[in-house]
Structures are given as structure tokens and as C-alpha cells.
Image 1: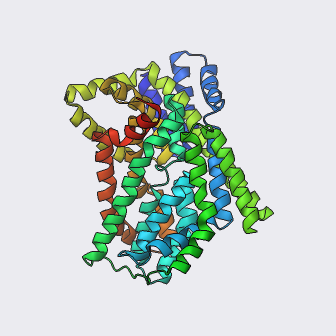
Image 2: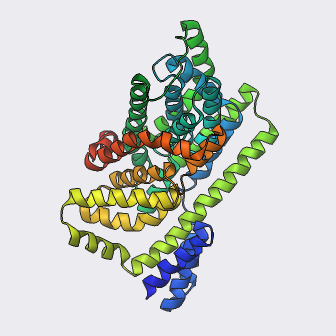
Image 3: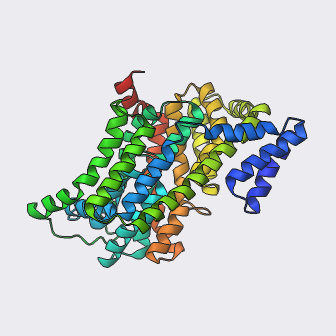
Length: 427
């Protein structure tokens, strides 16, 4: 009966439109009242989650990304990527993916990518005569790289929930992120090569133009080195790296003479809203996780899976399908914090490393960013490109190939995730 109240309350609140963080907390509260627990347990769990040095990295990474969007860093990155790759088959579509990979090393946020850099990419592609639906599809698909290539907000959240090193999570995500981006670029090349899409190309940039584009983008390109290099080198903690990235972004804004008081306030405002949204979800999930742990839901779910099959291969395949479907219904970080308690128990029973498990779960859930009915990236990209949503959905279908390919590779070849963390810090 307790489980029915817990899950039923959560589903009812989500259906009527309650924010996910409050829905999780209220569902846990309803469970405590039914079970005779002291309601203060929910408050303690809720507030206790906020007291985390790990989670302090989230607002700083978000603020760094928002400041960079305000001061024109994204345009400089795009111009450099265009000079470098614009003449290859696939043209600006290839540039779109490459620029998103670079910006992912600064922001860690899908929304910052698709709304900031995505706007510049979309405008440039439409101006060159690209189909609006294909333009929106490429922009939405490339933005899924943001939550993978470090720094990544979702990786910070998983590290806090699973009690693992943020540095190891970041290191483990580098290879899957590069594979995801590179495979999208290969797909675009194939689509253009065989005439499935028309991708106008620019003439090859001369050394002078390429050098000027690199010079203007170089200060921005140093940002991933500061963040990732500092963390992997043990110089700074992830939270300190977030602070450093924010300060560096502010310095860039002053040097570029594009940092205005109004734009800084707008960046801070966007950061506060996004941070509150994420932390309310994480705190609510912590209280909800306590309730499902009391009810032993993860153990029961694991028992059902193992009663169906004892093959780890098939169990992982079932989990892949389940996570992809769940990601279609609940977006990004919200989905991650809900499934984390159950996945951690299952991962322990399957003998999966928590670092491998976290990236395997996150890559799976990212597919939901492109899959209706939720599909936030598709909706935003379609709105920016002013493309019909149905056309964007059709245009994005080929991009499931590199996404599912990355999912299967990460799932069944753990060394794609664990190689770098083990190389740097040992097994």
C-alpha cells in the first residue's frame, strides 16, 4: 500500500503539472504520513542534500556558460569551427557539431548549447540555404553532446547521488562524448555524400583567415583546458574549477569589451533559475530515494529482472530500452535523479563500476531530449529555426544511429568509460 501511495502521488502531481522537485518531495511526504514516520525525515533529507560541496559546482558552471553566451564567445567558437571545417562535405552541419563539442567543454549544459550557440548555428545555416527542418535537427542532436563532454552538470549530479569522484566522472565521459560527436559528423558526411540532404559548402579558408579565426577564438578555447586540465591534473576541485571558469569568463567579457551590467544581471538571473530548478529536483529525489529504499523497490525491481533472465547482456539491453523510454517522458536531470537509486542497486548486483553506470544511464536518457512527447531540444531548435515540428522529427531520425551506437558501445565496452579514469588515477 505504501508503494502505491508513493508512486500514485508522484504520478498524479506530475500529470497536473507540479514541478518535478516538489512532486518528489510531496510524494515522499505522503508516504511518511501513511507509514507513521516522522514527517521531519523528509525535510531533513531535502535540506541535507543542499549542504554539499560537490553540488556547489553546478551554479558556477552554469554561470560561466551563461556569461560566455552573453559576451559573444559562442560566435567566436563558431567562426573558428567554420574556418576549420566549413569546406568539408556537410559544410555548416559539420561545423555545428564541432562547435557544440568545443562549447560542451565549457558549459556542461544542453540548454545553454541549444539556446546560445544553437541560435548562431541556426542563423548561419539558414542564411546559407539549409533546409530549416534539417538545420533544427542538427542543432538539437549536437546539443546532446553538452551533458556528456565535461564539465557536465548531469555528471556532477550523478557523482553527488552516487558518492563518487566528480573528476573520475569527467574523465570517464571524455571518450564517449568524442565518439558521439565524431559519429554524428560521419553521419552528416554520409547523408550529404549520398544526396539525402543538401549541404552547401564554403571555399577553403586561407591560412590568414584561419589564423585570424583562431586568434579571436583562442582565449575561449583555453577554457576547457582550464576546467578539465585543472581537475584531471589535481590542481583544483570541480567546484574550484567552476569558480575559475566563471572568473575567466568575466575577464574575457571585460577584454572583449562586451560585458555589460545588464547582460551580467541576465546571466546571473538565468543561473539562479536553472540552479534552483536542478537543486529542487536533486533534493526531492533524495527524499524520494529514501522512501523507495524503505519499500525496497530497487531490490524488488532487480529480483523481477533476474527472474526474467540471468544474462547480464540481456539485462543491460532491457535497461537500455527502459531508460530510453523513461527519458522520452521526463527530461534530463529530472529523469537522472529519479532512476539513480534503483540503478545504483542494479549496478551493484551486476558488478558495474558506478562511473561506468552513471555515463551509461546519462547517455541513454539523452535520447529523450530528441524524442517526443517531451523532446525539449527539438522544440527549442524547431522554434529557433521556425521549422515545422513534424519535419524536424523526421529530419532527426538518422541521428538516432550515432546515439544508439554510442549507447551500445558504452554499455558493452566499459573501457570506453573507464580507460581514462584508470589511466590517470588507477583502478
